[in-house]
Image (cartoon, rainbow, N blue to C red; front, top):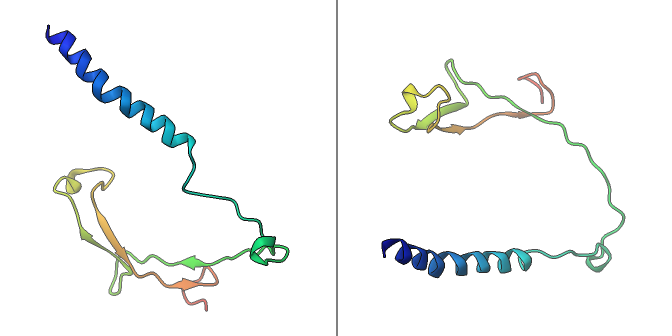
Amino acid sequence: MAMAKSKTLFSIFFIPLLFSTLITARDPRFDRSLSPKSLGLRKEKLSHLHFYFHDILSGQNPTAVRVAQAAMTATSPTVFGAVMMADDPLTVGPEPNSK
């Protein structure tokens, strides 16, 4: 009896969820394509941007610091659960004193 009841509950909840997911997945209402002409845009230009972030983790003026962590972070080999805050300098070259 319990097995039949669990199958019925499964059918009542899972099957409608499955169908609603399939219907939603086929209806891409969240995006649309725009033609560049309709926006008054000219031919596209291609730009390559190169810039560097400098993450300083230690010393007198670090630019990235840990602001929060989970209780198990101290024993985790991956530092899972740590939240960092960064205020990294952005430069045009790889040298920290670059413009």
